[in-house]
Image (cartoon, rainbow, N blue to C red; front, side, top):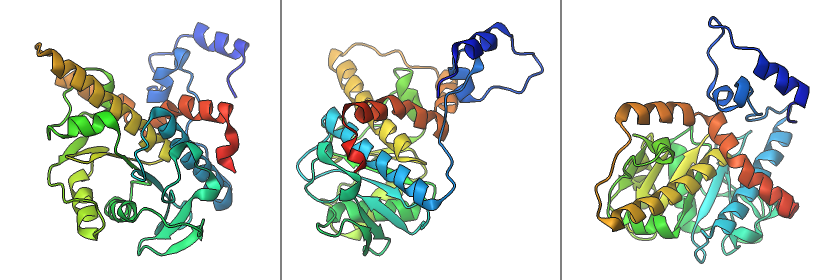
Length: 286
């Protein structure tokens, strides 16, 4: 719930003492040092699982609205909050814009279906990629991969993005390039190679393929994906002019990354998009 007007007024009128504890990134982003609600906490695994799956289905709706669907390609996964050796993922051939909680499939790290929707299979290449990345990155609770338009276009250059705007600094020294495209990732080797190329980064550009992002929450991973796709689009626009580029200096880029890269901050970044889907049609929670 947002602060009431009198609370906001009092907070703004009282200067922060010089000896006060440094503000968190979320507090710095809120006028008067007021932070919006970050990642919630839950009293039970069941409650957290339901919330997590609602945000997973909501992320698919956002991807659908952004135009990231490409046939049966593309997948988002999120680790189960209770069983760290399991993750939830989308079924094969369900459009992102139609995704619901009841559509989602739960798999273990051996590829066995252990919960959720058992009426249709998951995408085999998706299972390969997401299993490998979840195993390689215990901190990556959520993973987004799609074949979005501008990401595919920029990926053909086999280059990292230049730090040419404030927003792309969210990936400052935190994204990599996978240059050894090995075809559709039906075999575990290709998934493992992608996971290796991702390394400890927040994102990777997959040459001849698409984009992948990871996060502590599905909200973080999904927001980073939308930002990475738009950053690829902007880079392509800038490159097409042939004009010299002015880069964000390293110190400023590093400072921007430090402020913007926190899981709570990136969770909040996604909430306007999630809440729009919730407002327009909350049936994705079914």
